[in-house]
Image (cartoon, helix red, strand yellow):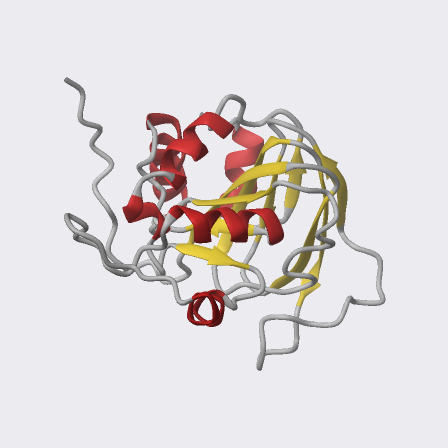
Length: 224
């Protein structure tokens, strides 16, 4: 799937940006389907940048429960609609939502021997600022732009270990790019980075756990 240069950079944990790396990975229509399936709006799976989900539910006195529902920790549609209209959001545990995403996870796991997931990020407006702001993660990440444009910057490895969000570094970023559909960036763990949505945006992040002794999911794909 990846060319030799990209594969070598991922193996060596070298930050990079690459134009047109992965196309036709996912779609707004597929996201719409997921947001209408209750398991994908579970509290542990559906995340917002400003995490006031429970407080908002309490203030509006919304109920999770209804006849036939087996997942009582999932948000009802009216709550999901509110959050996707007012925040950058993402869905976790999405590595098997379609065959293409599952295949990327398989390739990354082959290259790094580290379990990979897929997180689907999206925002519906262009006035939500820089989302999570400058921050670092404990996982390595390959991030693929699906729709829209994102200003993406990567700085060096952080020396601030007590909190994931940090002040914007003063030095020039080592990656500074406007991501368009199909483009990708690779961010090693603990490298400070920031993604600023320039318009309605859809992207997929593939986090890879740093430890190489963690459990891997099966990547077998069921076909009927």
